[in-house]
Amino acid sequence: MDRNTISVIYGKDPFEMATKLMQDCDLAALIGDRNKKIAIKPNLITSTTADHGAVTHPEIVIAIIEYLQSQGFNNIKIIESSWVGDNTKRAFAVNGYNQISARYNVPLVDVKQDSYELVSVEGIKIEISKEALKTDFLINVPVLKGHCQTLMTCALKNMKGILSDRSKRAFHSMGLSKPIAALNKAKKQDFILVDNINGDLDFEEGGTPVYTYRMLAGLDPLLMDCFCANLIGFEPDEIGYIRYAKQMGIGNSDLSKLNVRELNQAICLPSRSTGRARSLERHTLQDSACSACYANLINALARMDENGTLDDAMDSISNGKVCIGQGFRGKGMTGCGVGNCTKGLSINVPGCPPTATAIREKLESL
Ligand code: SF4
Image (cartoon, rainbow, N blue to C red):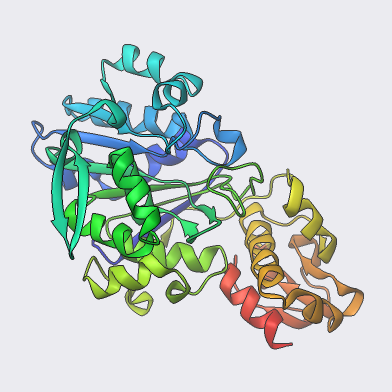
């Protein structure tokens, strides 16, 4: 796998999806030396389970451990720190990490209990976990989701879990964006497995999961975040820490050079929307829509709602609803549709599935 490639897989079994992605990327070859110290960095921001849309599915972490151990890697730790105000040990317990640790003999590192090294980057002083710094190969397993301050969170921002709580507070006082980019200059991540099964629409603490049933793998956190921004309806430059990461040379941000490898096709599973996502569904007319396609549409509608462009766009299309799904294949009719299945409609956003940004741009142009 090269740094300009992102692999994508769809499915409902996080263990199987993660395993296939690692095999496809040949993660073992990327790591190389079997004696390397490997850290798995999930997102356990709160003591909630993955169905809330905030934390990494633990089956992905199990898949990583089983894959690594089957390949002869045994120097593995799981490192994480929940956000300020929550307890990492409780988050580990709620998500079954104590059993995972015992079963696979993989230590859990609660970064809140670790000692820290004070690192100065881009004029910012950052306290970083010594365990994280001495890791030879860091596998980042973020959840792609919305965020009430930074708009989105994925690979770059998930690294906040290797900070002391004092540095986390300081990051907030500095507006988050620049220090998040600086942190990624101080400690690089080596492999990224994005949990995009059901990340939250708006908030990093979850509560409004949007079921996308997708996972992604890549090597460049900036490229991954630029791509993922598009998936949930943002232009990369709308995200402050992406702008700083570009300035600091954290990685590649040129999506024109991106090679997306889809290992399979989007799947159709029943929508399980809650809260705000459910209220946005009133603007959709779906018939057998694939989950990723539908999730991208909901994300696009959410971004438009936030920007105040939603009502005008819905007023300009027939029925005030966007058509989506395989049931529209071969149908020629008046209306607005999302995805290649609806290409017979008078207004269409092409793609299979189209990104939320592409949907948003088209709808806002009407
Ligand atoms: S365009 Fe059709 S087949 Fe493709 S992801 Fe959307 S609903 Fe599924």
